[in-house]
Amino acid sequence: MRSLFLIAFIANLSLIAFVCLANPGTVAIHFGWGGIPDSWAPASFNAIAMVGISLMLFLIFWFTPQLLRAIPTRWLSLPNRDYWTAPENRERMIAMLSGRMFEFGTLTFVLLFLVGLLVYQANRAEPVRLREDLFLWAMGLYLLYTIFWTIKLFLLFRRPGVSAR
Image (cartoon, rainbow, N blue to C red; front, side):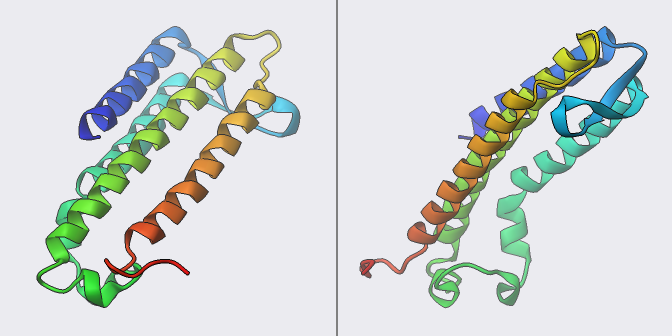
């Protein structure tokens, strides 16, 4: 999953660079209902902001294992915390949670890539307008995935040998 995560991250950065070069002037960076732009900025500012957001997300997802080892147990919130943070189970918990975070990070970068394509397409249209239908589909699917991912996470961190009733 780490390699897919890296591919999604690099694809996202590549799209940001391409969009910045393809749209050298002012671009719409926010859209209201109906896909109508309501905020504008220089393409370079948009690129810097998107790279910053992408790097922040990358660092959070990439360094999850190190963060989990460094933070006190009382700060962790997961089902059956006492069981999973016991010394004999902690490394397994870190590996399981890290894998799930890479999965979530990959899909997050896929969403950012799709939104980036939609914003690029919107800025190339005359008049500038976001395909709101596609944007809402992408966001809806991401929300459904997030719900599925959360349920899967809760089921993953049941105590072994304890079945759901």
